[in-house]
Length: 265
Ligand SMILES: [Mg+2]
Ligand SMILES: [Zn+2]
Image (cartoon, rainbow, N blue to C red):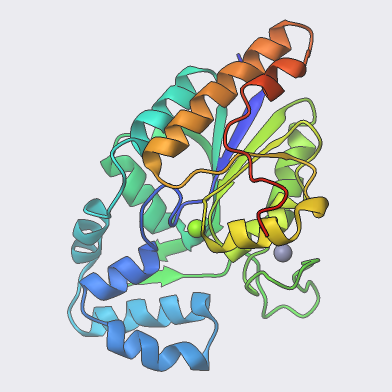
């Protein structure tokens, strides 16, 4: 059993779009979404949009059907299965919501491969409307979001989540994969010996390029599902091999793939 925790972001990391936008667009509510976006936080707006869709007669089944055809690169699911087969502990940390993620993963038969999903809670109410709530209750002034970068949305700082996962897995190496601005804060929490896999040319990659000195983890970029698989799986194998050789980390460096050059920016 590899002593590796692999943490995936969901939107634009596992799937190839933003699930919130995907559902809103596919159910024809883009215009209203764009009108309301300047007036409220994204997380609150998603709950509101679920009410609007419900009022328009869109059902949970309609949302489920849209989620089942969410775009995903064909190599992502094989990569996730391989990582699991190699003994990694797989987790998701996402600013989507439990219903979207669970529906998608179950449809693709990979729900049970993940030991934990940290995201915004959601449930279907008595009227059949999907309700979406913040992961962190930002309306409670007694416990404000403790975010060090001020880059995170008010409902979720993924760094706070990563710290909790780290506290329960002190002897394990972490691999973190993400694309968005919200993935920068948790990247700063990764330690020496951990690995960061930012999606190339996406917002987190720009932030990492500009702030490389703040990152302790070894950085391996990827641009699509095929490259993710080709970086992630050899990395897991190299870490596992190094572990069996009494933690000789030089072997990990030897398979270092497409690390961002220091002169990138
Ligand atoms: Mg994302
Ligand atoms: Zn944060």
